[in-house]
Length: 527
Image 1 (cartoon, rainbow, N blue to C red):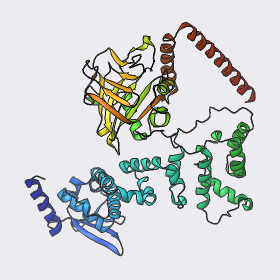
Image 2 (image 1 turned 135 degrees about the vertical axis):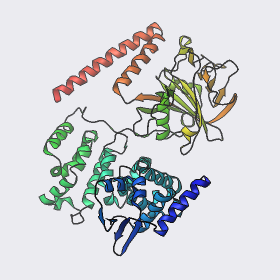
Image 3 (image 1 turned 180 degrees about the horizontal axis):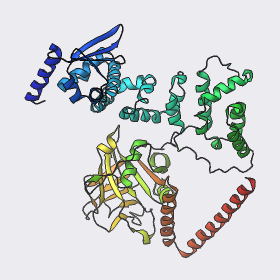
Image 4 (image 1 turned 180 degrees about the vertical axis):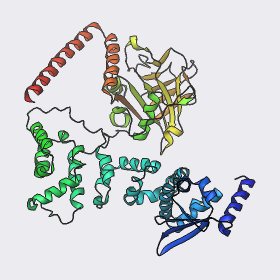
């Protein structure tokens, strides 16, 4: 801090400590922990929105030329720290115990000190992360009750997504706030089998009432009614149509009294059909099957795909978060699982539509890869696939390093973003630009000597051995975008094929359409 500002801060705190010319008496806390502070209304009005509103709207009484005010829901120790901050503009959080930080955060929210709220949250996340994880359950009740605790809410949500099954196996499941339960089971990407969610919801509801008999056969109508009232917000979020008929019969039917009558009739009718197809709800999205990236990294990649890391007209698009990623990453190929073989690579990755490649360099935490918005092909007609939407990148694997350490290179010229050579030493391979970035079995090659189509350079020219290589198909969650991409892909795919191959494809499509029509007809008849 600047010397002059530091001196000013100390002098203002002297006014607080010496209680010079005070005009404001604030009584904080409740017996036996209670204290009256002698402060200055002018400073509090200038520094604290809460007191500014309170004083301007005559919430606070004035007696004998002194304002008096009582605030019982804040501890004196906590309020003293806030006062020092309001007067001097400084606060040392390192001196605070972790539990005191939460009290300080709640008090800051109560007094509408938004900047202090953000500062405390950032400190807790960076300095007390282990403590947060160890006390997750007790802290979650507080965190999700305050809208201003957005940073902690995001972190807690990420923790839940890292191990949702572990959360639902907690022995203290009954202590989990209903808001968290509802938040989890409402999401498409909270991937747990639907029947397991149902069982844990029932467990959560019954644990709230320890007097309920463990054997449901001994329950009275009143017992069912009690559970029904407790789960009235949760039950509509359960995706009964995603359960098997056996699961529904064995696990749900015994609890028939707690389900709304119309819902039970509809679900029962559905599970009694021989053919089951429903538009009512969708299955939950599975987590990303990857050894190189996690769900947060996938959100970053999705942002790059949609150009959200680029600056246009001095504005930057908002990056996707893990919970609103518009793409599913479907694993097509993994070198350590399928083998670093050109035949396997061709079988799994060619003619699969838009794909993204991610490779981990041997003996390092460094990742390198690229996005092909068209498709890979061995056809000579498709050797030079023109597109302006592809990119290549290098970054570092690890906690929060994917975006921070990344170098993303986009097309320099409006020519070839992808170059798919027919063979290299007799083997087909995947290449971006004109051999700027190539993947050949268990090796990655970077070449800038032929001229480069991407800028900036993501890594020095050379050959690099790989520990892992993964290729993912990009499947948009939006139905419109999904069919749009597939239309463009199949159009290019058919153009790339020989005449007799086109005939087989068209015949297969015709048979498929007839099959779908028959299924739809059977669905209508049974509905």
